[in-house]
Image (spheres, rainbow, N blue to C red):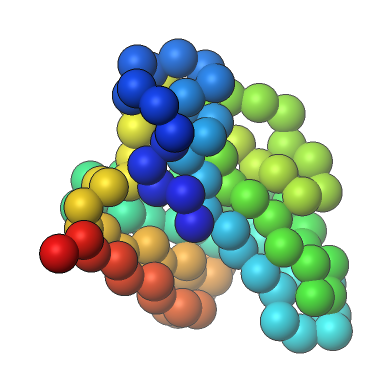
Length: 108
């Protein structure tokens, strides 16, 4: 995870895409992410996935900014930051809204 992009938070394309969360498929089988969602607890912003597949044992970075989805990178196409640098929770849910995992961070 890199929830605080390096340098100034100036809202630029580069800065927004330097804020990302990694999703990893720990199984051997490809997972279809169609209908899945990744949610921030603090900002209540949700990224919904469509037509993305995550191969077995593969990782994918989910960037905040705009870009073209590829095998290892997906983009939320946002123009504002999603993750709270100090404290937040990222929660991926499958197409049936079942929680797959949660990742919490805080700076003390």
